[in-house]
Image (cartoon, rainbow, N blue to C red; front, side, top):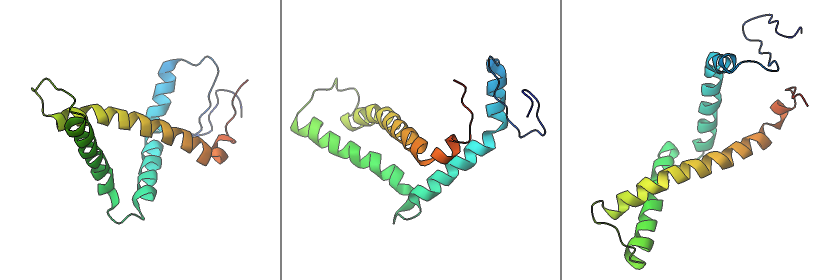
Length: 124
């Protein structure tokens, strides 16, 4: 394939020194692929669980309950009293869980999708 030439609209050629605008345009054009891959991952993850997708809501709630009991009741960590301690714990825990889960799933997806990565040309 000639650099910069596309046979059809779905051929994606990554060219060196390409402007960021074109990069974001290509990501927007292929957004349906990202949505499909994310939806497939969600279906596979929760397909064989008894409670299904609700596990993703129960897990942070149970973590909040445990942390509230340990740090709020047993350790008696002080709060300013304006916000209930469980809400304070939940507000701090959600960004952390999002970050840690995203980071671990991103590294796992690189390992699991190694066959896709071998088909991509990475310049030296």
